[in-house]
Length: 220
Figure 1 (cartoon, rainbow, N blue to C red):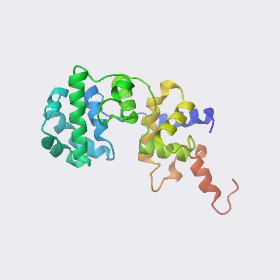
Figure 2 (cartoon, rainbow, N blue to C red):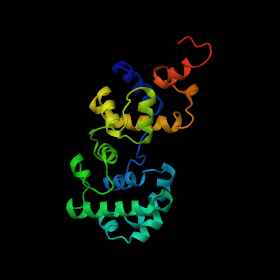
Figure 3 (tube, rainbow, N blue to C red):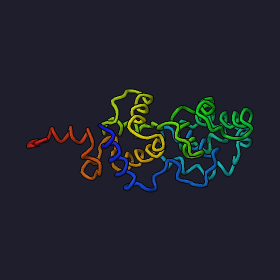
Figure 4 (cartoon, one colour):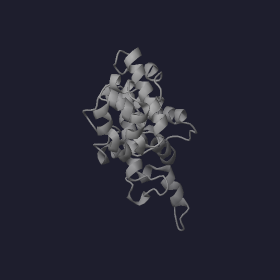
């Protein structure tokens, strides 16, 4: 992989997924983005979306969620999986935002990482989608998988993959890159059965080149 190829992949994905966004609701507040991103761990977009309206109707502010009964929150977010842990995290996050940040979600990496349930992935998503800040590349399961398959990274940890991706792209592209790779992972580059035959970036993909070489009669 070189930077020219990386830029070509970015342009192709941008054209294919112009509306891709980890947070599809443009009117979401920083607090809502924080909570939704914490809830998104190890579940589907559909599951998170199914609880969004009810959750924020019941708890529209950090103050409201900070005072919530955990059992009530668990019942609301049950369908997202790991609901007891997630309820603890979002209630604790709301309390910290309320008590330590005057009810305002912080806009720095160091401060966000102090919040329960927030790691670098969540912090990167919040910074980009809530504040327009490119602090890094959010490495979720899709980004991790695609970075390895396409050939951006051979890293074994999210931190290594993030560092490799940041090397190939300009800072102003980092947040958008996350959205594009996730969109491609959901639509085409499936974990179990990637649809290489319809993939627009297959000619620049390490995985596709390797499986093609294994096919009888291949001249690659």
